[in-house]
Image 1 (cartoon, rainbow, N blue to C red):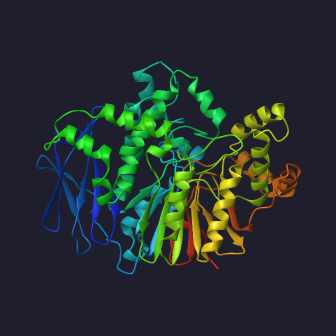
Image 2 (cartoon, helix red, strand yellow; image 1 turned 180 degrees about the horizontal axis):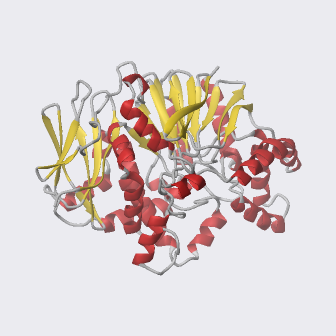
Image 3 (spheres, one colour; image 1 turned 90 degrees about the horizontal axis):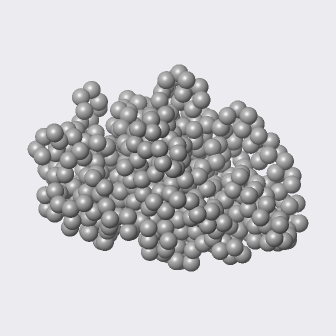
Amino acid sequence: MPALVVGPMLRYVDAVSASIWVETAEPGTVTVEADGRAYRSPTFTVHGHHYAIVDLVELSQDIASYSVKLGGEQVWPLAGRPPSRIRLLPAEGARRLAFGSCRTSVPHDAAHARTHGEDVLRSYGEHLARAGDEEWPDLLLLLGDQVYADNPSPEMLAYIRARRSTPPQGEIADFEEYAELYRQAWTEPEIRWLLSTVPTAMIFDDHDVRDDWNTSQPWREEMARTSWWGHRVVAGLGAYWVYQHLGNLSPAERAADPLLRTLLDYAGSDGAGLDGGDALDAFAEKADAEPGSNRWSYARDLGHARLIMVDTRCARQLTPGNRRMLDPAEWAWLEEQVAVPAERLIIGSSIPFMLPEGVHGVQNWNEALCDGKWGATVRRWSERFRQAIDLEHWAAFRRSFDDLARLLVRLGKPVVILSGDVHYSYLAKANPGRVYQVVCSPIRNPLSPLLRWANVFTQFSIATLVGGLLARLAGIPRPPFRWRVTKGPWFQNALATLTLPDQVTWYESRDGTVKPIDSVHLE
């Protein structure tokens, strides 16, 4: 029987086109009907799962409601929910972006509300169902840890235990489990409706694959010695390509994607052909071993602003003594993107660029020690310290931090860097320059009260005093500019909006209702 497994998800949208992604229970043709027109695409199949992305093109106005049919049978919209609509990018450019990161998919019962708090994304979806157009975002940016492959929910753990007893215990092992992980994350009614009607752009962080993913060369070597990591990283990157990356691309970019062309050729015009799982696995294996073989970063023009979403995980250069957040090819691409004319830049980096200054100094110091500044014994202990407390942000790749800092200051235009990862939210401003760091994390995965106080104490107190001193002792020069945290930190679950050109608002959920935490105009 025709059915949707996941979706529909409204992904890429510009002034004249929109792309709708689905996973279906059976192969076939997916039809999206909107404003009296029908748009179709066959499914492609990988590892027994069927997917399609349907492009609605040559659009001239917003679409008040669309429907999805499989094999001629309507499967969307669902009864009892508002219509799923498509709002094109306004002629004057994007007006509002919503963003956040780090969302666990645990139940919404009282027990999990006590441990995980309220799901702000779920509450935001309920809010938009009642809100006027002036409150709707033109784009929702999901900045990493859309799923937790290394810390799955109780329901996901039950699914894993029913399948196998082999390593890795309590973690995702293969594509089949990733498919179920995404299904559980994105099919709650409120989340499903929200994703069907608000365009989304996504980028991974470590938990989409595994905690500390690519933190260092020793980490990669340690994981390579396990019996299961090779299969896991291939599954993780393959699933990311299907569930997240495809929808980040414009119709033209997708049409030029060689892997998608291969999978569609396998599937045939009716979608019922061959399974392309081997082709997807080969692509993912190469993407992990040779990061330059594929680019996960991407850019979009938003009218007066340019959005650049940067891969800060897979594109790393991990050579001790010459660590780079972005390898040379990725850095050259970023330089090209920031040079494109735009009034302002919005950079999506899953991990913050500007941490509290003291923590920045600690990470500079740790990187130098991991590179052997104080000898081999200290190097080994420093690597353990690096992995134990996640010293892996831009500050821990100091060469790349300095390069990007100088580049952004030279631009002489407003730059807003949107990030997540750290499980608290804040605003920081560079001095001199018009570079802002806006962090919103988590959507639903708060730190325990003890860890909140520990973070305040170490990152905003002790580290402020000793971070710079440690960096000086290791002979590390001062960064190209100074900055300071001007708002926050806030530790509750949160989602934020950037209302262009310059207003940022952070929201929490209380009793299922979205409430503002704070709001600020960027100077």
